[in-house]
Image (tube, rainbow, N blue to C red; front, side, top):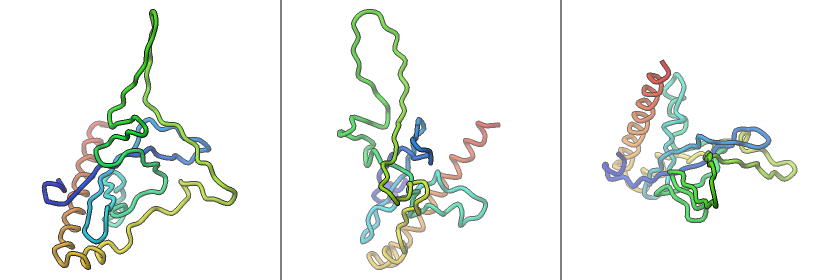
Length: 168
């Protein structure tokens, strides 16, 4: 929807550090980023916008949790990892075999003495979003930001309602 409104947007995929000594992730996490002239790529995570107040629901506009290990940007694929949005496997076998495939990610943070684990680190924030946008594009840029917030909140609420209906 951002692209339809003339705002450059891209997909970002990551696995999530869960706060354990080692993490196991089979769900992964995705969000959108919008490009604002003079400011750069701004994360818009509609999935993380939960809470009862508008402030809580908009908490991750322009920021993201510091516990994500980004694996894919743009089209959703990584040539370095031989990995795409849709999981695929390459294998060979001689003779009869039964194959059980499960897509997961496992990782463990390698911390130096005194370092903070990612799940305890402060979230990554895009500071003073509206100031940067307004400086670069004038009032029109501010309306782009307002539109992007509305779109991301609408997507988040829509997904939340769908998930709520599935659980009932």
